[in-house]
Length: 146
Image (cartoon, rainbow, N blue to C red; front, side, top):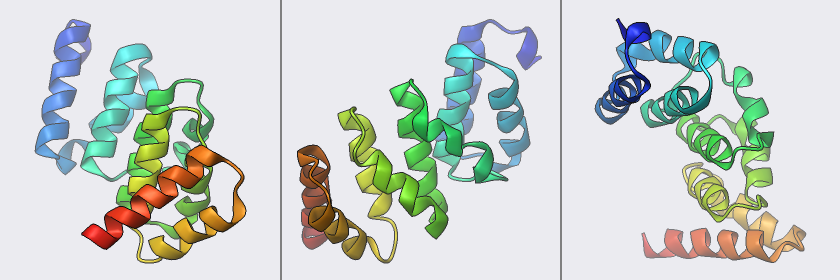
């Protein structure tokens, strides 16, 4: 009955799946993401990033260049959850994003990797972007505190 519901109820259903991290609904949520648009699609992406798993990350990597900052942010969160080393270059790029929220999530996601200190130090050493440098420093500092 999901497809027959109002958008508000569809979003609420996706939010519950996200909060409960219901992996058994992964196929359903991916189907919603790929077949809907607008707020419902964004909410499905949020749910997938909350669950922390997708069947094929390559189907989502184009979102790193999305004009919608929330899509970039949730993709960064998803990449951090998966901890696939192939996602690190995307996260490094997202650390240079124009949106603070995207940069923050990219930094947090990088911090989930075992080599996060080296990655963040590499950004400090190799970027002229003051915002990326600040975020790298912030997450290096968070690592020392934690």
